[in-house]
Image (cartoon, rainbow, N blue to C red; front, side):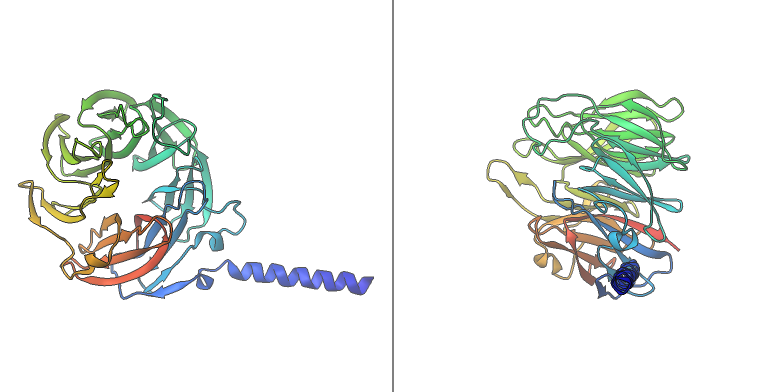
Length: 380
């Protein structure tokens, strides 16, 4: 009997030892990439994963090792139940911490930015996007139970913006905004929130809520365009994308003057995703038609934001765009103008992450997770 007990204990020790060894990014699947950086340690990639499949994952590029590491979260955090969660919607780094907004799991996951080690989480119902100011995190949330169907929804409840303490992860305050708020950005101590109303396609929202951070109240609601999505700041201007109605009303990029808080102009281009670098907007356009059930075209535009005109019909110059099935995620490296683009393919199989230099030539590509969509750069 003692011999059996000793054997069982030895076997358990062996299993535990193996478990500990897997808590190491060196055991994760890796791919060699050709890239270095004097400014950044890592490029994190958040893979969304399909709804209700609990397949959100995190990859990262190690610029020193010139390697791409896949699905690192369960190896770094082997005791976290259900791993990262269901549908990753945003990822950002603020100070020494990294924040991943996990939509279907109703949470914001907080990690150590240097290691991706789990530090805590905050429950926020149907959270969407995140930004930061003055030591606080600000998260848009639909603030309602998530339905697997996002069409024909009769619930017209307003969404909220949550103010989160970044030291203890407690919710400090909330404020109501428009229906189904998505993108959020800060300028001049004000938050700009894009309200989509995306769960109600017959009655989209069309407003940007402006929140004063001193009082944490909505001070103005701007009528902009239907089905608003992303928000980016460039100098004193706030750029907001509208996805249109996928029928008669086209997608556009709208410009808000951050000093007067008025709609100043618009740029007539289809915008599925965009980023701003060096007074230039990099735009992925994949206009979808409800009538045909197809994407009608794919564009990779560069817009001069001084003149609001197209200065390049494609920021990919070497023909690699012909290999991309469905461009999805986008980030421009602020240190050198490199452009990162993801290919979501069919939303089922593993996607691809591409890096192009400032001239539009491919530097590297790597296999990502399911629906790679969001980026965060970690400084050295």
